Picture 1 (spheres, one colour):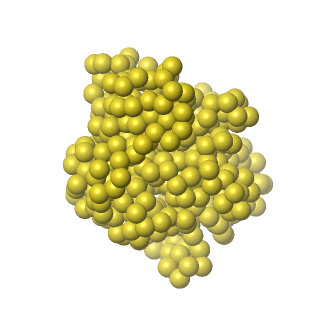
Picture 2 (spheres, helix red, strand yellow):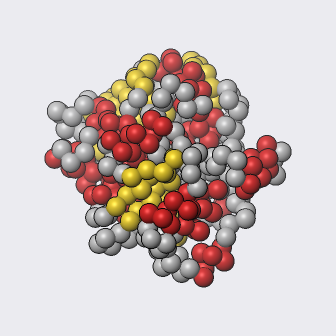
Picture 3 (tube, one colour):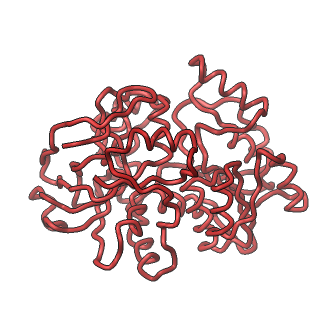
Length: 391
């Protein structure tokens, strides 16, 4: 089959690879009908995630048609079912899955020891996201093997287009959990750093959860326009004005009640001193992350407020104003999304017409166009916010 494979920093190619096969009783094989490029895929493209190997199949946002089911998953799925597959792989029965902490599954990562050495404990396995997180082939391909298929995939009813439900695989639940982690209270002002797809869904979800005001921060004009048009957000262009000063002005000196870092490891901050140092350290392998947004959110958040971090970080971060966080009494909540908790409720939101997630799509391409699409997305060219591909 054809699949998009990683071959090194900035080098992704369409290769012919073996078709996936049922390997465990609870597996299913899914024929991909739609797949997307996620912002966190760009971290792999940029060479920031360790334990990638040449030939790894990328992609963790995908959906399709069930072609084959192992006997252990046959009670839930059958050939012909149309499904969205969550990017986290969870067994459904371990200590963490039973607590609803599905992205922390103790069972699904076969390379848990590698992750433990890096993180202290292993999170769940993830599709297409390094060997440290399982080495599972991703869904930017014609077919994919889905482990624990009796737990993960959600069946999609007829009448909904792929583009309406595809983002249940990651970015819609991720934005929703980011807003939920804020612990919203009546009258809250929420500031969202990063107006990429996760930021857009965090904005939408903040309104759903009762925010009184949402402020979106970015410097890419088309992202800011989307946040205004579809998200009803006030906006700050950090390329034109200082974020701290503007937020203090907008909140009468108090700061936003809740802050969401939807940027993560590859923050850009114009010519700010800390961002220049971060970029230099990454370039000479003295650092792994550029956490400018996290620093800024800590300084901007009101006393006693909450910072939610859906943006992916991959290693060590430094120069974090932890004293400010402690003395201001801030709460920080973060983590990969507990996908299985949100699939059904958010599907119902889509069915009721509360939201059509397809508004974020700017580019519709074939899988064979993926290498060029990665470059376009990475360089923010051609108004690219979200790429959806069909095999």
